[in-house]
Image (tube, rainbow, N blue to C red; front, side, top):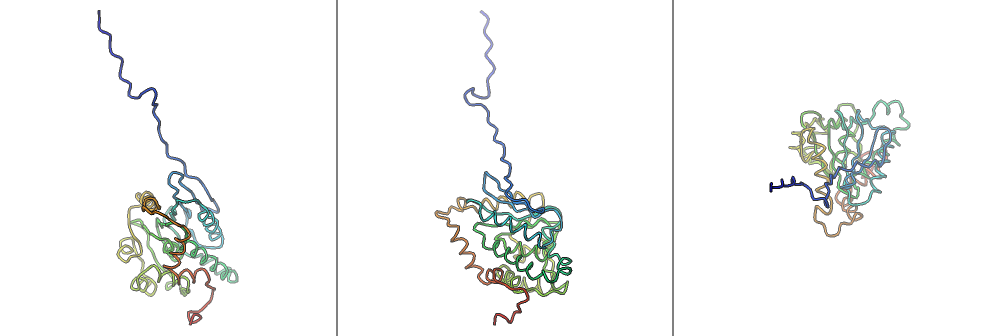
Length: 270
């Protein structure tokens, strides 16, 4: 009798159908005036996207950033936060034109921005600044308020522009710089208005890593995930203790940002 042809092999067992695990879409937590806060459900990593323009800091931007910070603080653990943007800027600094047109409102506006930086500085999780382009003035202060910084190569500078535009620094900004940068770096950055490209920023300790713009999102996410409590092998992570720890690390910066008054002179602390 002719031999029966064997049935073709089936690559999958009938009782174990193929399951394709698709990435879960990021959950939108906040979307206000071009600023968005998203959460990756699989990891808990939050991403604060400042937008695709110059992202100048004015009252509208501060209000949007505060709304994002409200949601970031309320987000469940485990979590970490990435701060970034798209295009050629992370942030091009304070909105000087708005300040010139609104001198009476400027004090309250700047104090509100300092309060945002204070909250970012001591957020109850690790924070990563993914610097996608220019970080001038307020943009660099936002980056410094984060725990870790990565900057793209090939485009963009980190710079304190106050000397160039004839403005004082202010105590809150100065204390944040002193908390995060070495004396030689903040002296060159502030008193000489040095512009740091990514290589110079890395050498000066302004940033922790540099990479291409194509690698930036993935590297920032990996850095954030690596700093989740489980991946740090922490036995008992306490978010409130983590906040207090940051306040203890940066007491002068936190106090100045959280309590600073517009127009106060350096001598006012003596």
